[in-house]
Image 1 (cartoon, rainbow, N blue to C red):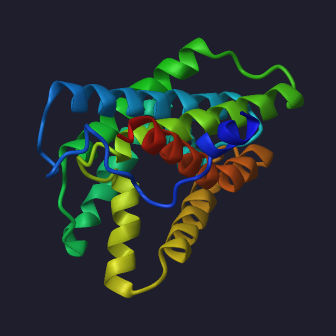
Image 2: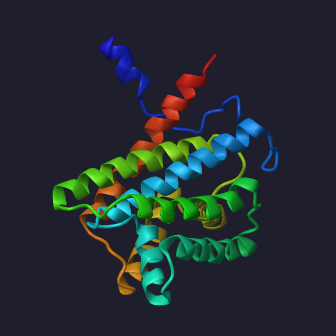
Image 3: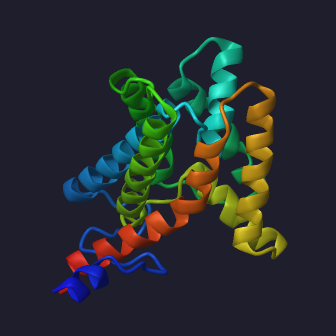
Length: 221
């Protein structure tokens, strides 16, 4: 029984096809929209939990927080601005925008602000680590749900894959380069980075892979 339990949580290396996976990026259905929005909402709440840890944000949230401090706006609204700017880089890369791309920007941003409203700042370092780990699990689950909808990549993922296809540089290296640049820019704007940033970077890939495996095995016929 224990072996079966561990097997259920075995990481999945690709995005599985599910009953709600779309055939194209604008194929709408009530179930698909529900899964998409639920996944993005969980992503936003998870991101807010990492921010509330006060020991370091995810790299893109370091940038969003830095912008929010400079402009006097919420982190959620700053996330919308970052997403919109990133989409501009899609034009020369000839990336196709899907329903999930647009929804990604707004739903995640709304739920980041909602999460920051409901979660108090972690009272100590140990609680902060718990916040980061819990947030990373939620971001992984949210990612797995929205990715399996097949309605288009989010702005950041689209930029990453577009640069990979344009330059031939490996996806992992492109992602690392982008996140280091974003983290550095956010740090210059006084966004919070530190242990939480490192923990998120270390575990987020595995979190997404594990949840993709859970989704794949839960929906397998």
